[in-house]
Image (cartoon, rainbow, N blue to C red; front, side, top):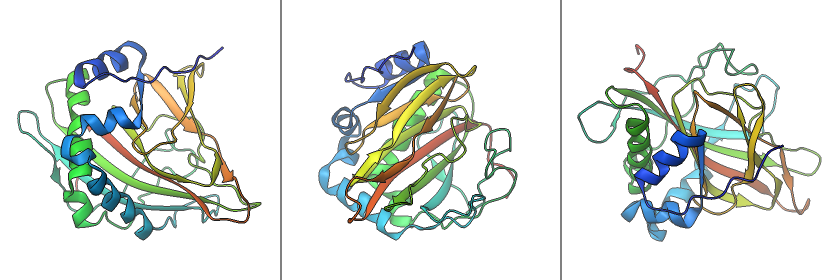
Length: 252
């Protein structure tokens, strides 16, 4: 039987690493995340960051035929011994079928993350926070990093599916999922399970910057479908997903 995941409210990297090292994941409330991000967590910077989700493009690679997902994508390199993340040339996103039974096995080209977003304080602060976690869990090497802006839309009689592939591994080392905006929604519960499928926790990311940080080698994750709370009004679930995978970028 699963237990609710207690949110992590402490500052900053060491408690995060301890939580993820101990149980494979951490659930961090938005206010605590904002405090960890410094200037990147300021309201004005986050407002401009969140507004960029209005310019995402429809995901044309949904094997279920769905048109409920919009996204943009970018990649970065983080080199051991060097600070920060260097943005790489635009490239497709690829997952093996074993990690994504619905959309895996093909190169998926998405619209790039806008330059101002990629260089902005919120994304850079989130990248640095996640990189600190990744380096703490597995020090001593380079990282290939991907950033995904997602919007899941739902309408009356047409639910949206944040993880249509179900509870899954991403096939990386570390995953950071941050809520950006949640409008007129029911559902969208995050599930964390171990590699054998036993449920470890359930929680709902509701407020801006509510986050889940995951050791993808140890745990799987998924999100339940979303539907409009008021069927007469538009609804959406906006999240940022960052992943760190050991090694250099794949060949362009």
